[in-house]
Structures are given as C-alpha cells and as structure tokens.
Image (cartoon, rainbow, N blue to C red; front, side, top):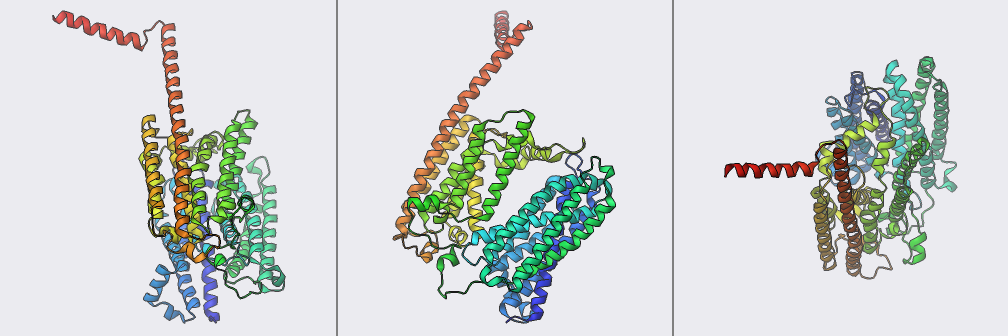
Length: 622
C-alpha cells in the first residue's frame, strides 16, 4: 500500500503539471495563430504572452520532475527520501518506459523555457507548439489500458482527448492574456479551433470511458461519480462556449460586449480548472475492472489486443481493431481535404474527381493496414506485418501524392486577416521554400530515408522494441507513411516542389531504390536468425508454425509488393518526362510565334545570325 501523503503529492504534482503544460500550449497557440504577425515576425504584443509561456513551462518542468520522484516512491512503496537516491532515479528514467517518458517530458518543458526567450518568428513558435503537445501526450501512452483489450482504442482516444483539451483550455487561457485589440482579432479564429476541439473532446472522452470502464461494476464506484462530474462540467463549458459564440455573432467586433466576454472567460477558466482537477484524479486511479478469470493473456499484455483466429479471407476483410489515434488523424485529414474541395466548389473552381478518389483510396488503404485485417494480423506474424508495411510505405503514399493535397491547401487556405499578416497560407508557402524543406526534398535524402531506414529498423534492435510498445508501433507505421509520401512526392509528385529534380536523376533514384529494396528483401529471405528479438515468439500464435519460415515469407512479400509500385513510378516518370518535353516545345513555339508577330527575330534566327557573324569575321581575318 502506498502512503496517503505520497498519493496526495503525486496528485498535486500531476495537477500542476497538467495545468501548467496546458497553459504553455495556450500561450504558444496564441503566439503562433491568434495574434497578428508582421510578415512572419512575432508582433511586439507577443512578448507578454511568451513571458507567461516561460513561467508556465518552468512550473511544468518542476511539476514533472516532482512527479517522477513521487511516482517512483509510490511504485516502490518507499519514503520520498529513498526515492531521491541517484542510482534508483537513474535506473527509473533510463530503464523503465514510464520513467523515460516522464524524463523526456521534463526535457521538453526545459527546452520550451529556453526557446521562449529566443522566439521571434511564427515558424519557430509553431514548431515549439508541436514540441509541447508531444511532451504532454508522451506519458499518456503508459496510462491505464482498457478492460477488454482494446488498447489502441483506449490509449489513442485518450491522446486525442488530451490534445483537444489542451488546445481548448489553453486557448481560453490565452484569450484572457490578450489586450482588447488582439482579442478582437483572435476570437473569431479561436472560435473555429474551440469548436473542433470541443467535438474531439466529447467524442474521444465518450469512447475512452466506454473502453476503460466495466459498466456492470462501475455505476456505484467513486471513479464513475468522478466521470459523471467531469461530464457535467464539460456540458457547462460547452454551454458557456455557446453563449460566447452568441455574444460574438455581432456583425462588427466593436459592438461585442467585451465585459460580458471577460466574465464568461473567467467562469470558463474556473470550471476548466475544476475539470482538470477531476481529470488528474482519474489519471491517478484505475477504473473498476471486470472480475478476472485469473488466466494470463499474453496477446493482450504484449500486443494490446486479443489473439485473432487463423487468417482467412473473411477475417482479413472484416476483422477490425480500431486504432483511435490513426483514425483521428485520418478523420482530420479527410475533413480538411473535403473542406478544401467544398471551398473550391463554392467559388466555382474545378477540382478533379480523380484526385479526390485518389485521396479517399489512400486513406482507406492506411486505415485497412493499421486498424483493418492486415493491421490486426501485423501484430502477430511478420509476414502480415510486411504486407501492412508495403501498403503503408509503398502503395497508399502513391495515392496520397497523386491527390495533390498541398496544391489544394494553397488554393483554399485563408490569407492573412490584415494586409500586414502573412497568415496560414503564407506560412505554408514560407515553409515550402525554406532551407529545411529543400533539404528534405533532395532526391538523395528522400532515398536514404525511404530505403536506408529499412536496414536501420529491421537489422537492429529497434524493430522488436518498437513492436512491443503502442507508441513505438504507431511511430513505425507513421514513419512508413511519411517516408513513402516524401519519396513519391520527389519522384512523381504533382504538388509544388522547391527542388524539382531532373527526370533523368529521378529515374536513376528509382533504379537505386529498386536495387536497395531487392538487396534488403534477399537479405531478409536468407537470414537464419529472427530479427524481432523474441517478440513474435512470446505471442505463440497457434497458426504460425515456423517463425523463420514466416520471416522469409515476409521478405519475399516485401520484394514482390515493393518492386511493383517502383516500376509503376518508373513508367509514370517516363510519361511525365515526355509531357514536360512536349509542353516545353509548345512553349518555345508560342514564343517564336509572338516574336514573329511583333516583327522580331526568334531565338533560332538570332543563333543563325550569330553564326553568320562569326563566319564573316573568319573571312576578314583570312
């Protein structure tokens, strides 16, 4: 039994850490998106917000450090002074996953403390906001799982819940920091962020409660009462948000009742702090679980989901274990893409239905390879893992690239709210032309990431370790997708590229990719040792009889499924080369026609005149 005093310290440190981290995110969101920038530079009024970010991040770092000590004392059931032993602390933050995530969170908070004093560009604050969100969600991956084995659904929905709550609560806090002029410009944009955040909070919270609670035993528990209280506070916050939108629905911002607005914001902050306190208590206590059968289920413990039956066509097509985090990303992507298409349609502009169909196909393939049948079986057999890998890294990215999402974004993203502001679209353009973007789209860099990461992942200890953790498996799948999108964007992409490679170089890169991928597959097929470091062996899937044979089968699948998309990309590159040459020829012809119509010599006539002049000079010299 842990000490009540240590339990209290743990709860308080968690509450301070959660609150200060959310306030940190809110300040960074205000600096990045809410306050008007000056052509990409932070406005002078942002300095006050960044001071708050500095102190919030400092408190976050202190609370996170305290949480490490109190959690360690709680786990070991020892006094706090024994938890302060340097050897014990070092072991906890370097060898235990929970301790590692907590320590990374401390480092993230300290990094934000240092960066907050040096920020002067919108791009920097945007990247720091992403860093803060990563720091907040890392420990969530070690939270209490669901009671029925739906680990990906429980943890993923909780991650979405925390991110949405951070944007919502942090944004309200940020609005309270702004002066009246900045607030008038910021509120309409934050209203959109808040609306989507509220929707995500409600849906993810409902899903998480459903997956984590055993309702037959939970209704009369303290945990259930706290959940109901948090639901009541959330409903109150949504109601206040509705009143805020009603107050802001005036046609002119000068007529907004800012006194009433400030009163409602103050009430919101008080209720939100209460909701955060309840959420802290929930995160520190396990939900009521169903009576255990006493039988250890290795599949749920290691893979996070029950062992499926032997694979057949029906199970592969219809088996579904939702990965909430991936589903959230895919739903957001579909929502943004659909919104862009609708904006173009309302303007009377055209957008190819083939591009839309390509995007939908790519999204469906990603969902099938992460939550569908292949995604489920990928946890239990290397051969199915390789099928999912090829879909995520080779096939789905082609459809995503051909759907031209960057072009759609550039045509539909909003401009700056004032002539002086660069805005979201301007920020995207600046990012596309930045030195960092030019580095990533270098064909050699894209090839190194696309094929080089195969050897770094599968022929080191990374693969087995990443398969055993939810965040590791998520990061691995996300890497496959992003590496594939980057590679095919460089080779056959239709979106703007700050570093368009010559077609001949693209063909050379494709042949190199094909050769490297074949070498990797042959090495995998000829390997006589397991590369997963015991991951699949401990699962003991009854329908996998020979792990080495299954690994070699995975190598042959990777070879077959990997070569076909590259060959298709090679054909597409030849076609693009021919089309570009044809367009260039037509352009030259049109230029010559214009010059002729103006009575001016064209390039060929100039060149002939130049040769004739050289001949006359040679004749004179003789």
